Length: 127
Image 1 (tube, rainbow, N blue to C red):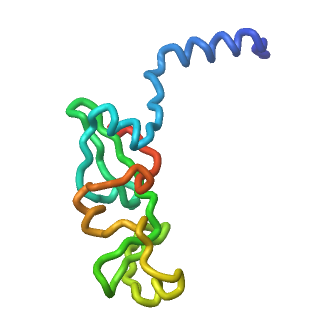
Image 2: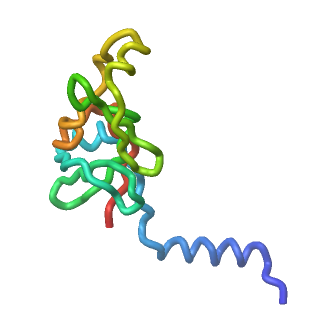
């Protein structure tokens, strides 16, 4: 039995018509401009660090887009791709780059949800 190409296309189009809308990823800056509130730093289902951004009806998980953050004058942390947080020596880091990085966030700000647009990556809807 052979199914014609035209019938296959029609069947696919009808099948897609009944599938609920596919959720689109959003950017963190777009969501905050729309009035979404940012939660505390947490882990998503995949183990990645990020923030839940919500407006009461819809919720998104925005992945963290930060490789490292300052803790205090002596310590900083680095984040691995698998979601581990490793303590590192801030003095060594600052010596290598020539001084403190004014654009590097502090861990306490990330944990509290005080996020800059560049610190958050793409946002996926939560179900």
